[in-house]
Amino acid sequence: MSGTSGSTLIVDAIGVAYGDQVVLDDFTLEVNSGETVAVIGPSGSGKSTLLRAIAGLEPLTSGRILLDGVDLDGVPPHRRGLGLMFQDHALFPHLSVADNIGYGLDRSGLNTTERSLRITEMLALVGLSGFGPRPIDQLSGGEAQRVALARALAPSPGLLMLDEPLGSLDRVLRDQLVDDLDLLLHRMGQTSLHITHDQAEAFALADRVAVLADGCLVAIGSPKDLWNDPGSRFAAEFLGRPNVWTLASNGHGHTRWVEAGLIVGVGSHHGTVVVPVEAVSAVDGSTTDGPTFTAIVTASRFNQGRYRHRVDVSCGAVHPVNVVFVDTVERRVGESLELSADLSCAIAVTS
Image 1 (cartoon, rainbow, N blue to C red):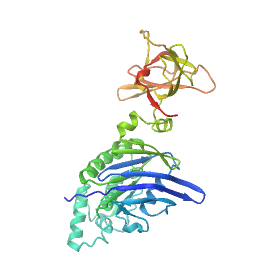
Image 2 (image 1 turned 30 degrees about the vertical axis):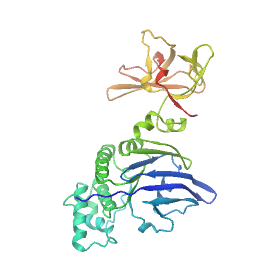
Image 3 (image 1 turned 180 degrees about the vertical axis):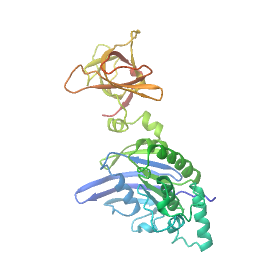
Image 4 (image 1 turned 90 degrees about the horizontal axis):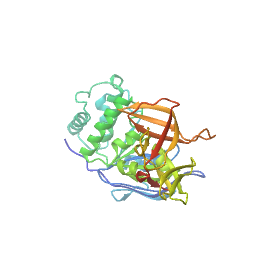
């Protein structure tokens, strides 16, 4: 089976606007050869516009896009060396599986025998050997998605772009295809840019994850690094990190949690931090060296051997202040607890 030599993508300070509305602003991103980068962000942050700009479907107001050092300005979409895979498959219902895959090879210059061999190779690559003659309407959702992937990869694109590719599938099938896609892309050395709203999918598939907000890149890193150090309050909260607190010294050797008006630590911690769920624990009658605070359980959910508890520490204030922590103890909604926080585990972020 032949492999793919992935290209390097450089998005250099590009801008895209629709009239007076700026959608991407001085946006820069590099995707290295053979790397998969996932782009996530809120609706309207510019994710799909980025993909369309790279594909040549949206004009740039500034900056440039290079693929292996070649400026793509003025290069039409069909000559950019890109593969595209979408959520809705975009397969041709009147063509067989083989003809759908072969459609992307029509400009490849392959003769009939070479084209047939390439289609066979692609079917084997995505685990669909023997499916060539099958009509599209006889495929399951997962099979259709594999055909769409095979069609995108058949011309050996320098860059594969995936736009919510698994969004229409159920969770079990999606998880399976994420694993398969991860192995396949890395085995081929395929450079990929993955646009998705599914953070679990992004973290499972990507070598690096980029977070967009209002057309700007606000964070990028490996899944592990980005989770452990999101960099900003926005990125932390968007990634679903609970317990983002503002800390200040009270001037008497203790740390105050500003939003809740509570003393939560010893020392002079200050600034905006993420307190990991594992750093918060119930005292449950045991002794602790640091201060404790009272909380009321508002939700409790069992998941994979542990309970995830959400508690209210605002003591009836108009705006609830919540904490999330995990342990192995089942707790009732309405139950009162004493909690402590290990601030030595806190992760500093910008506000």
